[in-house]
Amino acid sequence: MYAQYALGMALMFGVMRIVNIAHGDVMILLSLIAVSLAGVLPFGNIGLVLVIVPIAVAIGWILQKVILNRVVGADPLPSLIATFGLSIALQNLMLEIWSADTRSLPNSDIASASFQIGPIYLGLLPVIVLVCAFVIAGGLDAVLRYTRFGRGLRAAAADTEAAAMTGVDPKRIYATATAIAVGILGLAAIFAALRATVSPSDG
Image (tube, rainbow, N blue to C red; front, side, top):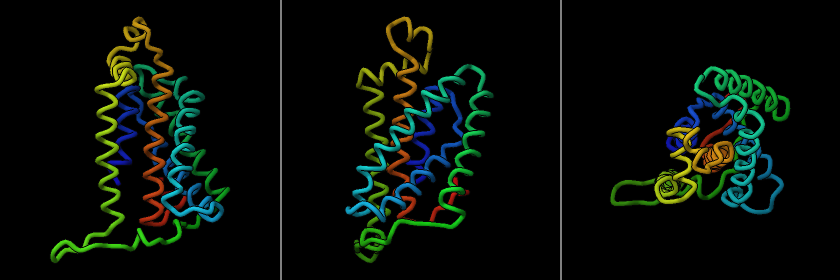
């Protein structure tokens, strides 16, 4: 779980040198959206991934375009102040919509299922979380190493001005990187709401 939380933040910091204080609040927001949609949509908890991850990607793209692109720079202080303010705003928005009560996704067979290996019983959900963390980390590494986008991302992280001179659009790269980072949070948000309760102050 912590790997899934951290991958997005590490990506944002590695590319834009932004310490996103609102990272946890965005994840809790996605968890609460998932809990609300679970009572409306006809498919199960895992099917929520197909809805929440695209919502998370859209939130990340908008967040970068509207707020973070204005504060990206060598000085980390503007981004710290902006994301701190965003954190407070998100917490109050969630309190207004969902109140301070704790919530979780409805219990499912996956959350309580386990299987036996010799004398050891392993929970199915923790194993799924672990496998997803490996897949996401490996996939992200492959994207950064072998794709055109990954090369542009690494170039922008190393030297924004030099990357721009070679045809890389840093703001587009930044928006895509944040969309990926928050998209990863979308998956983590569903697992968090399946494993435990969430409330607006948990971010």
